[in-house]
Length: 332
Image (cartoon, rainbow, N blue to C red; front, side):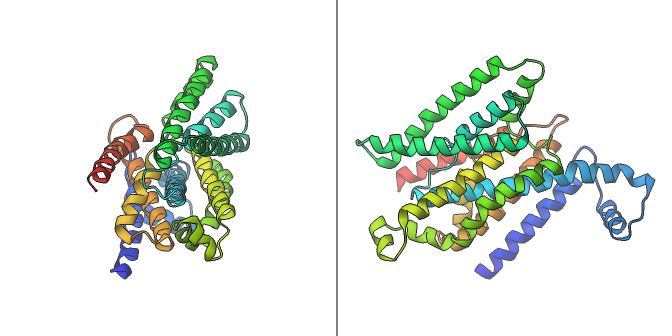
């Protein structure tokens, strides 16, 4: 069964890529794609297909690459947080990492900084947020510690939301405010190949340690004493994984705005497919997240005459899933 699932997931991902390439307000047929591929190989130029080239290189390809790396990154971060905190309800959104990174990125946009500085601010504020949430939750000595963690994350997310609202109030209503508003709703419409190239190193730096040491996540799911007896430096490993997951979230937020719920929903779908073993769960989560965001982005720009922000669609998917998860957990 496991040998069937990997090719099946790859087939779904390839199908989503082809669908994203062909669908949109300017449809591209498979024949156009074939001719474009031939021209790329032979170096020939055809003026009658110049529009297809423009749409492919400047619109579709950057969006598809961005959807793949952002979907994989946010999903991997969600799986890592859930594994580290041993709780399936934890995600970058619940812990406030997305809101913290969003606050840093909004500050960068408000100050008119470059993409690199915006990413740096998003990472620093996201890391500060997760540190603050864990610290405040530890101070709460009553009740379930995981519940304390989630509640503190929600409270501090609301505080970050207030900070974002303040920047929106102070922003220039003709230039900065529209940029901040559309960016907060999440979307891939303004992304270029240059933006993807700038963000890719941060995503790889966050992703590679998780991939190479994903077997250690299985040990982190054990009680700390048992993990230490197996030779794992729990504190250092957990800190490294938190930094990697936060970097992934911050890089994704700085590139496409706040796209919620992926980090919560996708690890659960992947866990249903391949089980809780993190060695198989992480690649499956990344592949599922990339496919899901590709499909969502294709729907967002094809369903109506205007493009629907991605954050709206992912919230419509994620919120009912979260409620269903809570109901199932209560019954169990």
